[in-house]
Image (cartoon, rainbow, N blue to C red; front, side, top):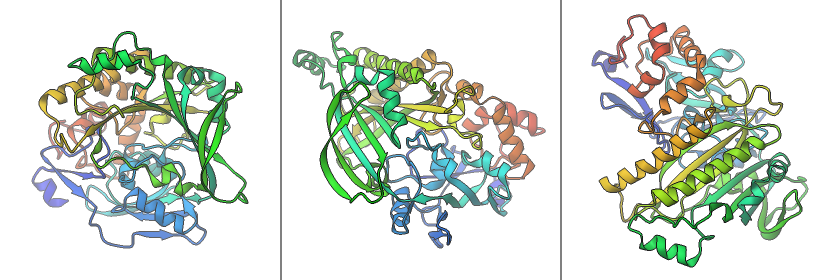
Length: 468
């Protein structure tokens, strides 16, 4: 720590590499990986309510170890490689109307602050610090252990249904019944153009830009539904079996289900992709949900309209797979998470729900391990058009901390506008408890996000230097 400060170098901890937003180290900063951190990896308290995890561990391994002790972590995102501090840093989330983002599961942190001091905090003794640092952006210190609140790894029924017409899910009653009467729900739109006619697909493949014809109607397409629901714990475990999904209007659709502990369902085990298929990008926003679910109807309709515009006007570059997708999830906001994007929840709402909508693109990493200039330009156009249109359609949205890009116009302004005084509260807390009073952990992008708060609370603050 001391040598970094003497050399004028900042420090940023790097995680599993899932985040696309500019939270990574700047060229003048030292990037620190905790992958080789040594020590006791896991410790579960006697009551089996709190699990301490070393920061070297990835989420899939954590879930597997916890399952062996009969506990799990609540609704986690789909993916095997995240680190726990990375998940909390960016406000990572799964989907459930009973839980907030993953950071709400944090009970405590053990960390090294900007002065090189070992500090230990928990929400019973240090609530102000924990509430502010649940989503910490790497600014509260080098976190080497996280204490998580855990829940019993109970049996759940996981149901997977495809070929659900978009129009059925635009029905507010269908959507509300589905979300409120189950433990967790994902709505997934696969960009595979199965609803396109043979002629439309031929035109698309013949177009050098791979644009779908104007005749294509995204609202005639189908979506997938992933559902987790509670079951009687005396229900026998079951491998995959044929099932039926029934919506509130009485329409039924073929599905498959399993009954397993939550840790062994799609979220806990994650999904496997072809070895050459890799995530290229993700752009995501949180938006307030209304108690009557009309807001998520608008969000879904706007989201699909934007995607249709991208299909018709921008197209896809050759290595981008037609297996990219968009997804809509729900989570509950709790007021003890200062920088959770779920803070956009409507204060007048009884349920305090938010939706997370997201565009994801996949590519063939075997053919193009490093994206070329032409395809990079096209990728940025997809990201920019999606991000700008989402913010234009709903000024209340808030970007996901791990899924946005600086080249999307207005993104940083949107973050500052939506968080408002909470950004100042966060910096005040860091200063009050001397977590990083020299701004050792702040990169250029975060200096910009917190610029007003840093200028007000740090005398002599200069956004272009580390040791202020």
